Amino acid sequence: MNSTDKDIKGDEIELRTTEPVASDAGSQDDEQEIDLLELALKLWRQKKKIALWCFIGAIVGLIVAFSIPREYTTDVKLAPELGNAQKASGSLGAMAAMVGIGGAAQGGNDAVNPTLYPDVVSSVPFLVGLFNVPVEDIDGEKKITVREYVEEDLKSPWWSVIIRLPFKLIGLLTSSDEEEGDPNKPTDTFQLTKPEDAVVKALQTRITASVDTKTSVITISVMMQDPLISATLADTVVNRLQEYITDYRTNKARQDLVYAELLNTEAKDNYYKAQQKYADYLDRNNGVILHSAQTTRERLQNEATLAFNLYNQTAQQVQVAKAKVQENTPVYATVTPATVPIKPTSPRKPLILVGFVFLAFVACSAWILYGKPLVEEMKRKKNEEETK
Image 1 (cartoon, one colour):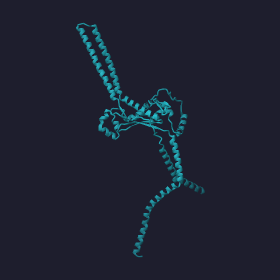
Image 2 (tube, rainbow, N blue to C red):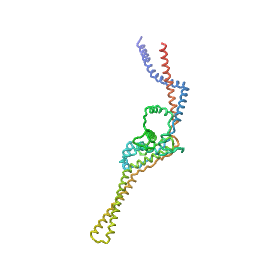
Image 3 (cartoon, rainbow, N blue to C red):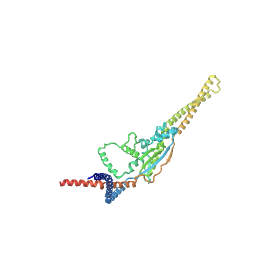
Image 4 (cartoon, one colour):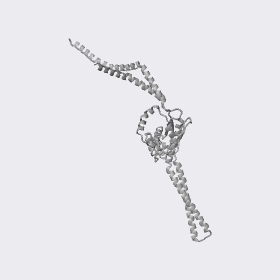
C-alpha cells in the first residue's frame, strides 16, 4: 500500500468522523419539531374529549357568571381649589408631581391634603356617619337606611354560604353570651359591635377614593347592587367629604369669629352702659356750672367715646373674621357628577366564560399529554411487580 492510498483512506476516516457531528445538530431540531408535531397530533386525536371538556367548562362558567350578583359603580370626580401654598409652588410643584411626590409637598400648612382623602373616606367615623342615610332602590319598593341595606339586602354567590358555613359552626360552638347591642342605640365609633363592624368593613370595600397626584383630581367610587342606591350614596359621600374638609379648614377661622363676636358683644354692652351713664349724669346736672361737674361730665363723655371706639373696632374685627371664614372655605369643581349607572360593571360574563373554557382546555390537554400517560405507566409498573 503506497502513501496515496493511505491519504485517501485517511480522508475517508475524517469524513466519516465529521459527518455525524453535523447530523446530530440537525437531528435535535428535527426531534423537537417531531415532538411538537406529536403533541399536536395527540391533542387532535382527542379533539372530541377536548371539545367535551370545553363544553363543560363553558357550562360551569355560565353558572358562575349568573350566580354572581350584579354590581353597579358610580364614579364622581372632583377638582379641589388650590390653596395659596399650592399656587405659589409654581414649576417646582409641577416637577415634584411628575415624580409622584407632589401630593404631600403641595399641601402647604394644610394637614388634610388631597392625598389623605382616601383615608378620610375609609375611616370608621366617616363610614359610621353614613349608617342612617336614607336610600331607595331603583324600583321604588324599599326606603331604608344604608345600614339596613348592607345587612339585609346585599346578596352573595351561593358558594359563599357553603364557604362560610364551617366558620359559622365554629362560631356557634365557641361563642359566648355577648350582647350584640341595641340597634336603636347611637353607634359608638370607639367600640363597635360585631354587626356594626361588619357593615363598616363592607362599606370600606364598596366605597373608595383615589387622588391623582399630578392633577389633584379626586375620584370617588361607590359600588352597590342597586344603581340608584349607588348613585345616591356616591352623591352623599361627596357632600360629606366636602363638609368634612370645609369644617377642618374653617375651624380656626370660625373659632376666631366666635371670639370676635364675643368681644364685640362685650364692647357693645360697655358702650351702651357708658352712654347711658353719661346721659343720666347730664339729666341730673343740667345747668350746673361747677368745675367739678364739668370735669365729671368730660370724663364720662371720654369714657363713652372710648367705649364707642372699642365697639367700632370689634365690629370691624367681626367682619374681617367672617371674610376669613369665607376665604378659607374650599371650593370644589365637580368634573364628573353622580349619575345612575345603566350597565353593571360586574360580573363580566364574557370574560368569565372565556376564562373557564380556557382552563378546561388547559386541564384536558395536560391530562392527555402528561396525566394519562403517567397513570398508565404507574399501572404498568404495578402489574409487572405483581407478575413477578
